[in-house]
Image 1 (cartoon, rainbow, N blue to C red):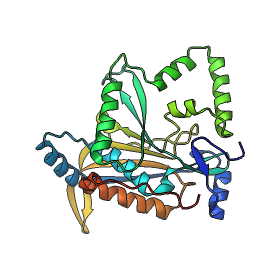
Image 2 (tube, rainbow, N blue to C red):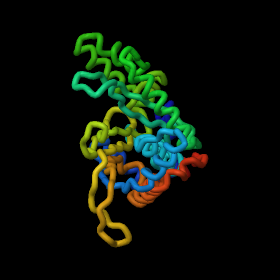
Image 3 (cartoon, helix red, strand yellow):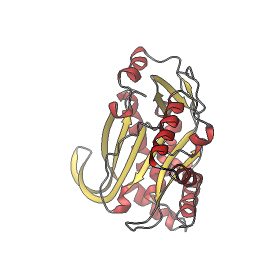
Length: 284
C-alpha cells in the first residue's frame, strides 16, 4: 500500500522518463524487449573438460545459471521490477527454473526458485542448483509451490478465478502475504528455461504480467553455426541464448553492458570461481 512491498523497496531517485514508463506501459507484455545471441562454447567446453579431469561434473546449465546470478549481483538495475506504476529494487536475488520429472509427454513439471546472496562461487551455485533439481525430480516429491498450486486448484473453476483476482489485487497494492511471494515462481529476479534439453533451439518466452519477473532467459541446444570472430566469419559450436526483458527497469546501455559481462563469464567460467560482490542499487 502506498508503495510499500515485502519483496522490494521503491526507487526514489529515478529519472523522469523512468517514472513515466511504468504508467505509459502498464503491463510487462507492453514493455518486452527481445534479444538473442549465439554463445561460442569453447570456453565452457574447456572448463567442463578441465573439471571432469578433477572428477567434478559441470554442465552448461550450471555455468549459465551461475552467470545469471552473478550479473544480477553486480548489475543491480537488473534486479528491479515494476508494479502499479512504481519501480522497485528487489531485496533478494532469486532465479526460477522449471524441472520436468522425466522426459515424457505426461511427466509433471515443478518450478524451483532459489535464493542467493550474490557472493556465491560457481561451485556453490552448482551444488545448490543440482541438489534441488535432484530432489524435485523425485516423482513423489512435492515442494511448497506444488502444494500451494494443488490447494488452489482443488476447488471449482469459478472459485479459482475469484482467488486469483484477490491475489492479483493484493499483489498490485503490496499486500500479498510473504508466504505466497515465497512460493510463487513468478516473483523472481529472473526465469531460466533450458529448452536445449528438449532438443530445440532457444525460444523467446513471454514475461508474465502476474508477479514481478523482469527477465526471462532461454538456452537452446548445442549447434554449429557461423559467427564473427575478430571480423572473420568462422564456424563454431554455439549455444543460443534468447532473452526477453522489461525495458522499464533500465535503459539499453545498461542492458548491453550487462550482456557483455554475461558473455564474458560464459567465455571464461573460471572467473565465477571467485567470490562475487552484491552491489546496492544507486537509486534507492
